[in-house]
Structures are given as C-alpha cells and as structure tokens.
Image 1 (cartoon, rainbow, N blue to C red):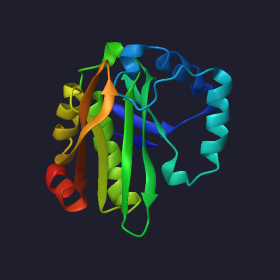
Image 2 (cartoon, rainbow, N blue to C red; image 1 turned 60 degrees about the horizontal axis):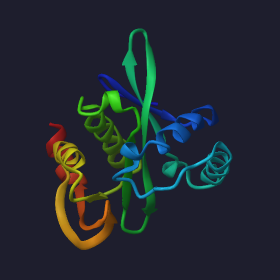
Image 3 (cartoon, rainbow, N blue to C red; image 1 turned 90 degrees about the horizontal axis):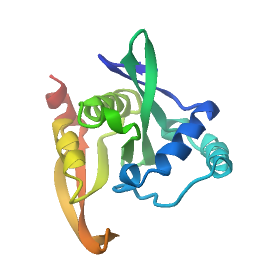
Length: 180
C-alpha cells in the first residue's frame, strides 16, 4: 500500500470489480478512456484473472480517499507495458466517482504512482496519452510534472470529430525536482 496525505493506492481485489462495471457504464466517465464498451461482471472477472497472470508491477491499484474514519475507492491507476530495457512505462488512470472530480485526488494519486515507479520499480521515464479536449486531465498531469512531448494528429475519433492525442512524459530526474 502506498499512502499519501488524503489518498492511498492499494492492490485491486476481486470485490472491487462491481465498481468498474458501474464506472464503465457511465459515458461521462469513459469519454476520454480508450475503453468504450460496456463491461459485464463476467468480462471484468475474466480481465481480472488475466491481469493477475502478468507482472505484479503492472497490476492496477485502487485509488482510495479518506472519508470519515475509513477509505473509499474512487478509481484506479497503474503502469502499463513496462519496458525493462529502456526503464519506461505508460500510465493509465481513471477517477470513476464523479463527485470527486476536480478535487486534486487524481493529481495526488499520480504523484504516489510516480513515487512507486521511480523509487520502487526504478523506472527512468513514465508517459501517458491524453486526448486534447481532456483539459481536466492535461491540467492534472501537468501539476504532477508531466510535459507535452508530442502530438499524434487526428488520432482519435471522439464525439463525431477527430481529435489530437498528446503524449506527455516525465523523467525520473524531472520528478525528483517536482517532489522537492
């Protein structure tokens, strides 16, 4: 478990899967995700079993926030396709509980994941893909220290239009400056 001020990251459990079914059923939650299909509990369970067979460093983590005296799951975050030779990975994040959008929890979760990626997994670079209209995401990633590295023009058909996809990244040396 990785614990921050108001946010913690913990291992995903099978009991979390109904949350994902609910989150993925909400078009607003999925608008800027690569997943656009409805997922049944059965499909989520199959995904969960397949995910558990992969490297533990790539297992997604639940994002939880302090609520009263306990913790409430609000989304997930994780490293994707770790390249051990080049010491880099992509990151994916989702805040599925809309009442907690725009409260800084995603930025805090990303900071905790970067701590894990750079200090524990010993990566040198973490990157992500974000669609240009996702201003909330771009703002959050920038606050966590990511910079725009490039643009894939018209890379996504979204809501009836082609939109650009930004590649944003952060190096370990840059993250060490951001965290100080």
